[in-house]
Image (cartoon, rainbow over all chains, first blue to last red; front, side):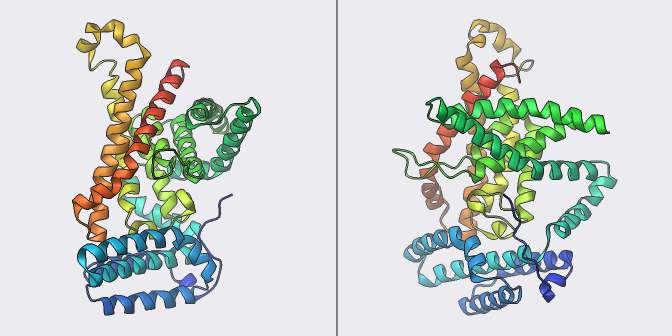
Length: 197
Length: 195
């Protein structure tokens, strides 16, 4: 049911260390906030498009991620052009588009395990302070990924049961049985984990 | 933090993912379809309390940023942070905490005892519990999320703050409806003795 954004590959973008990519992304995104010339922004946008190409992403895959944003950007651009002028609107749309695309490149070229490693490294100082326990974070993370499809099936089950009884499922009629089952389940899973140590 | 807390956090995170991925529900009289993501945020706050609800949303946002398509419409990745609606996503973290905190405060078993003893009879009525839950869901799940999301939107898009507020007004009726349903669900869960 769930695939991450990662596209397997071995381009230089895939081989670069995850931490470095994230750092560059953070810096360049911040820097872009101070660029106001549409020409420079267009240049940055074209550069990022080149990166997308280098990462080996197909137009379809990129479009799937950008589709919801494009409509939003068009509406926003229109509003902005009307209230602040064409140049302002162009600047804003170009900047947002570039930022989103750049982040997408990092997401598409970095596997989940590497991302997790960066997260755990970032959490390191907090662990040394004794605020958090990286093992428990990992347990929560893993459990969640495991439970998403389960809860999806559970939702379908309840929906079908209600339809079979002639009810129209609504968030209210679905919410109560969904939560009751979920809370009951928490006891079972916790017991199972504790029993295994 | 006990194992059960971690399991509950994982379960609610998964629940919010499932709710986010469900197709939006079109409604009569309301211009925008209803997504159930914030419904999950409100439920987490109402049922888990501030600390665990905050961790649920933290985990959810982390999973989304790491690139798993768990946001409405299957979006994900760091790109979301660059997008204009990032404030609404990040705002959900304190939003869930505040919902949980308000739930404790308003239904306060110890804290509001003077008021409680005064209208002990009314206290027992389920209607008041629903009102309290709904207020908590509105305070954390709507007001706080908007208070972070709207200025963020205005800043990113260089839009006028007032205009951004107007633009977001279309979402308010749907959100209020979600707060009401979340309150009803939480009250029934409580009546079932699970809270």
